[in-house]
Length: 512
Image 1 (cartoon, one colour):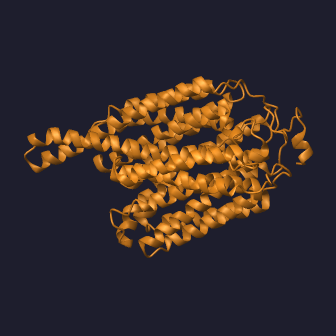
Image 2 (cartoon, helix red, strand yellow):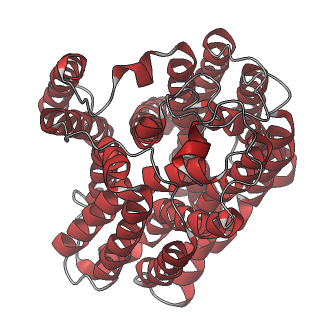
Image 3 (cartoon, one colour):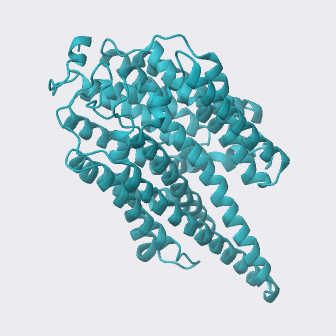
């Protein structure tokens, strides 16, 4: 498609790129690989820790090294996609991710493993914004775009549970190293397909000089923030290094905002985040991710430690949530996105997910999977699928095409930070509730089996206490969506305009 066609406001462009549906396959495959990686490594961690002699104190770095690099560099990755071209950045991100995965699989020491994970994070930060920007410019008709991002969103949403199943199979029946090696064929196929199929439209690149102070301040500020929450989870909120990280992140991010307001070509143009719709979406999505992390975190432990499920069985236990997400995303979100305002899907969606979370506050040691966990997971999946679809579609509405990569990265950033906050906050609440429960009840348990039972009861009590907070957070996300997200019914024939006018078709962004 020519730049002229892109710039012609009011002209319907139902055809879009001729290879757009083939491109969707390869872009979704790349997204699946990145989402898989978030959960597949968690399953393999105990075996990898034992093999590589990683201490308990250091094992968190297998997860943290990835989170710091990915979360810290997303804005930079989005800007690189706008500057270099989305296709080139996408293929480079895939190649680097494959190489880093092979390095992780071949690691012989803990240090090598941490380095490989950090490299995966670096290339993931290039890959994610580029993938979303590509879909944004290839699908120009709103109805087709809704369908494409419904499929993409369902794959990305369900990828986490697929990761649990695949990680379980590979760890149990092959070797933990295969949880890394499995990324290589994914990346090779996606990169080859993207190279031959994707034709990036002309125009829409941002060739302004790179804002180096902005890159340094945003990267250091986000790394300090994510690391602060990671430290809080392991060393407590009062730990001197934890507090120092939070103070440093506030100082660095405030300095970043001041710099962005003054420089000619900012890394993150403030117009991207000050729009009421986008601000509401970034905030409500971030909060929803905090709430969702409670589910993944606690249910994985509950099923494996309390119920004694194997890793494979645990993965299969999450499938109803995947089914709910796919239904919410492709059947409800996609069908209604072009017919009703986004807030009327987002607000109720978060409330339905909150209802599912509310059921989980009733968790006990002997809770029935079919009677309690199954309906809770279906509601959570359905609510999140329905809410995320329009939220992600609206996330860059009205953004100039040259800012699409950075705007996509901004949503990913809010989700990464939300994930870090969710893990630290909800884990701390659960651990504190468990400790006080055990202290209150352990005196009456004299025999060892009774003491073990009290420990398990304490663990479940901790989970349900933290899940109450997650319910509140999802209700707050719903309120923010109802209050701030005020976009009307989308125009099904709108196309992206060269000057970023308000009739621009939304660009969805999916969480990792």
